[in-house]
Image 1 (cartoon, rainbow, N blue to C red):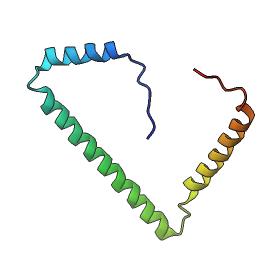
Image 2 (image 1 turned 120 degrees about the vertical axis):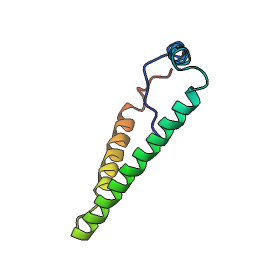
Image 3 (image 1 turned 45 degrees about the horizontal axis):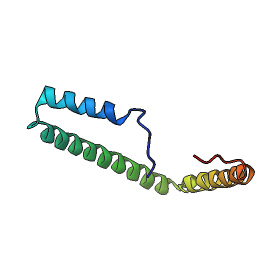
Image 4 (image 1 turned 45 degrees about the vertical axis):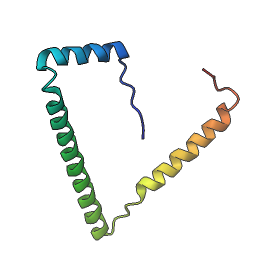
Length: 93
């Protein structure tokens, strides 16, 4: 799983949570989080359904659906080449 940086610190997250508690109250926050979770699950299921439908349609039409594997393979090759070139130059933090 890829982690996307949010560009906000822990203090900013705490401040946002404090404002949420002040606006909605501590008893409503679990209900809001539950509703958001259900919405995200529905969105994920809908996107998976669309994806599988497109996949099935492409397979019926005889379209090659393994193009993503080819692209990933090429990207991996480029990454390996870059690692070979920059291997001795990498910075350590």
